[in-house]
Length: 334
Image 1 (cartoon, rainbow, N blue to C red):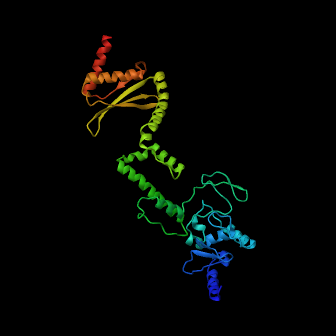
Image 2 (tube, rainbow, N blue to C red):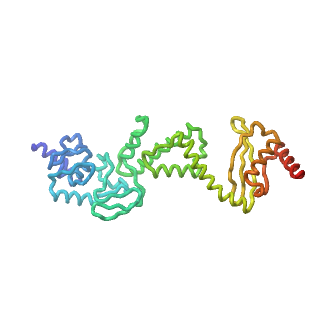
Image 3 (tube, rainbow, N blue to C red):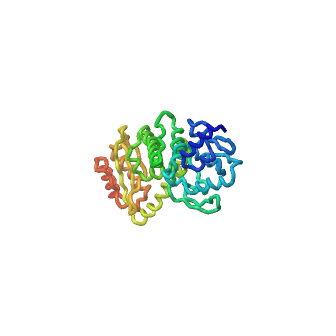
């Protein structure tokens, strides 16, 4: 090593706060991201933070320096102990040198914490528990951006020593909910759907699964998933059906016209447990016929159980009035 190099290295080290600079130097002063080890002459990418990992060893991100003296490892390890941060803490505690050249998410050298909050063992055999929400870091931004179809959209944010976690969280959430909103717009779904509990449960379920979730196929939505949902709905109806027998119920029919001018009649059953939708029928071909409406209501009464019905509630249209008169005449004749 020449004297010029040595002077340059000394000035570089004195300008840094990290003790690891005593055992590393920059071959190229214009590239502070590439740090070279004085013991084995290996150059690592990632600033002094990655260089420390190289000297201390036992990190998956770098190879260990086999020529580093034990007292140097102990010195750096002691320093890292004082400055250690976990994935659940803010990036505001990082040293300026570490933040400036940070490109990978930091790995705690002394313990491993599961983001779900479960107990895991650190490298000293001590159990630790994490209950805090894991913060997003610069690597999360990079990985999310790489998954987009248009790489030109939304560049990464600047690295700052303060509030970097909040900034990353906000930007990642913004990109994620934009995809959700785009799905609603393209599918023409009503925005009031976002108020449903099932929508919130779906988002939470996706979050618990994590990255790599394969979406349901058209066949799965049309056959097995639909059948499971039907079975689930029938299970919900069991309690209502028991209440129909015990306390009685009311049949409710509601007629309306959709955008294609089809006349739809919804049938519901109300009891002490609440109102349950049962089925919907397209009555466009006979909605104005009192006889047909009476037959339709009569079949639904038999389906629910005539002995369980207290009253039938319908619209006050002339067709329903006629259906009521037919029922009255049949009752009197009987």
